[in-house]
Length: 339
Image 1 (cartoon, rainbow, N blue to C red):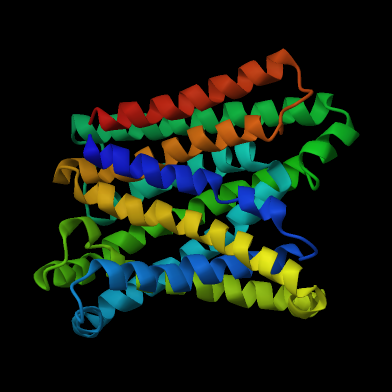
Image 2 (image 1 turned 90 degrees about the vertical axis):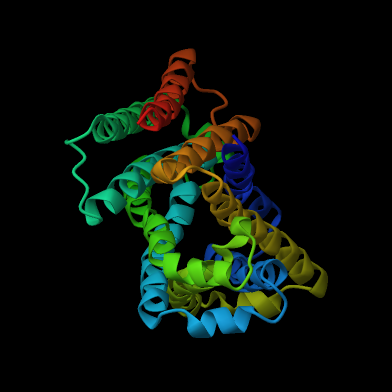
């Protein structure tokens, strides 16, 4: 139970990270996105690793870790970075509630299925594997239901109300991006698997089991930062938004740094607490930790969506369909957990 509670704390951060962006002023999306990325994927991993491994051992851990593990962690992190990048775009076009529900639903499915398949496990040969497949199928059903709710919203809500709730609402574009984001974002779980040798060395050096994954996060999130930095730099140059950083007053600049770094910290905390929670689960339960994180992210993000009035003005039928989709998604993780 402690493991699930720790994962839940992380999921609150993940579901909430996009909210501080609403306080950012006069910066284009690419400008504030890479600013939060600097905090989430470069600064926070190093600070948390330095604070949670024995004093003076972090550099030894990083030096002694197998090169293959470090390279694979960076590789999967770069793939996850593409997912994170498009994940941000999905929230931009669909809103916090719907964007996170669709993207994280796919992320839960792929992040749960791929590791045992790569390990050579046959999911059809055991009751646990069959339940896992059943849970994933129900996840896809939940995604479809939420997608239908979005279609109802797109059809029935007046254009001015759509734009008032979500300034750049675009259903078709948002759904395509969210599906891709969910598939690529599952690479974070593969990064944790690739980083096991790094975590093992951290534990040998006396790191508490709760924090064993923190040195791995340095490599995983560095990969994520690289892909996001390249794309955002490209947009900054193409759109000439590189001027954003110097064209605002000092007070606006500090305001934007404060809120983007706050967003970055919230996003990082999901992986910090996910690593802690996963370490507290029995070995046979570890495969389900990812789907639990994603389901809780969906639940909390939809609470934010309601609080931010993203579904205001929609019909009662649309809200019922949305809530049904959320329930189905959460139910899928409990079915998987039965394995």
